[in-house]
Image (tube, rainbow, N blue to C red):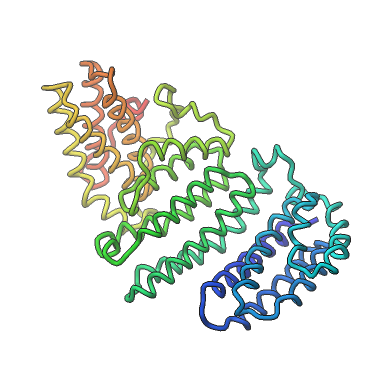
Length: 424
């Protein structure tokens, strides 16, 4: 049985090998030495993980790869490493065993399949996957995905640093391809486990990276860097506790930020939320507009300032006070014309911006508060909803509370005592 340490080590080595083969496939230079080293590492990982049958198969397969500059052979390596990952998650599936041996000479396939039979008797909470586990991944399956994402996050962080520091268009395109190939590794794993929310999220990241160019970087250097740099960490948090609604919402809020070349729109955000909640075994209806919020006192708690990223906090204080004042001005104007749709839409945009900035900064009390206000304004934009006198009073009190919370962060005011009551 694989231990957690064996599983993590195997996954990390396998992901490194797959990335090396992918880079060799996209490169015009000779990567023979690097690829040969990855084959050796992969053989060691399989032996270390004690997966009987695969060790011999890997040894035989490596002998068939004679030219690491041949694109067809490199493509076979890329596909084969992905299939090894599938096989160890479901070793009793004969179709996966057939896929593994398809690259071998015909006379070697049957003997290798026979060698894989003992592996198919191997049982482990991680390696044996039934349909219930695929529909609702167990902690061991999700921990395997976490183990894959941790080293991948380091690579993505390094590549995104290089993307935003690139000085030549040709270099930028190569870096973009490397980034997309790395995200594709996560996408393939998410598809194997049928984590449709994570798969859709990966596709969204890939589509956004494809839109990155020097003009966009110059206009969005700070915010653009942050959205690309932070999403893997948010995914890790989600995978470690996918039943936590706050983790799902944090992901949604992040991908709605304007720092992306193409942020999620309203329909895309709702679709992604439903998929993430479905994978987390949480009833998506609890987040519908008609469902009541589950309110907890900690939703309105503020962190210690020294625990926040100082640059993000300063950026938040630079923009948000004016935005909170604009929100109050919008609501004051609505008291004179309750049916002014452009004003309602403006108020919705302001609360959406405050929510996103607060989430990125780690000020989740303000983010939660703004999120509720945004939902209210969103409903007011749709007929037959209308702004009643009672709701107007509530919105005025809420905007005052928002300003007071922001003032508190500037050291100018006490935290409003009615914030939890208004949030409810």
